[in-house]
Image (tube, rainbow, N blue to C red; front, side, top):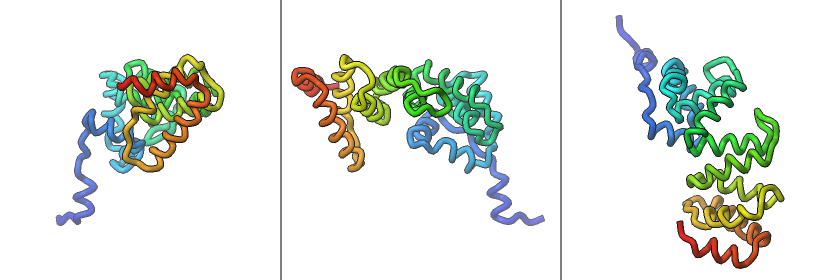
Amino acid sequence: MAWSAQAKDQMKAVQLYTQDELVTLINANAHLDRVVADRCQLVQDIEAHAEVLKEPTYQFLWGDMLAWGVCVDAVPERGVQFMRDAAQQGLPAALEQLGRYYAAGKLVQQDHRQAIIYLREASALGNLNAQLQLVKLFIEGHGSPYDYEDAYRWLFNAVTDDKNTHAKIADYLTRLEQLMHPKAVRNARQTAL
């Protein structure tokens, strides 16, 4: 029996994602697309890595899959809990996403205070999306002025090759400066990370 090239491609086993590959996919927000592109072949492996091995990248992936019903039935409560588990282990992407969800009231009740807690932790770990979201919340009047200097420092020292992101950073820094004491701005600019 002769197999077509398409049939052979469909029969190839999909390899489980490495930690580095999964972090890259998560940071690019392409992790769910990848699971779907792999025809949902790894669902049991992903679940085992999340629930048994408790690997934070897989907890985050499994949580996102459950939250949005990707390759499994949607169970948002369990999904968010897995994201929280990944965040408690210090996964910056999980901290950032939960912060974003609390800021917008997506899957959870809107809670700017909780959003700032998650976003501040992710920002301290170098997550640029969290830094941008955190400063946006500060500019909108949420949070404490005591946190402005750290947020300014993180964003001031951020590195990006994307021109739009670079322009957004410059705009946010200018707007945050207007809320800060000049000495705090000087301190934030002088303190290199």
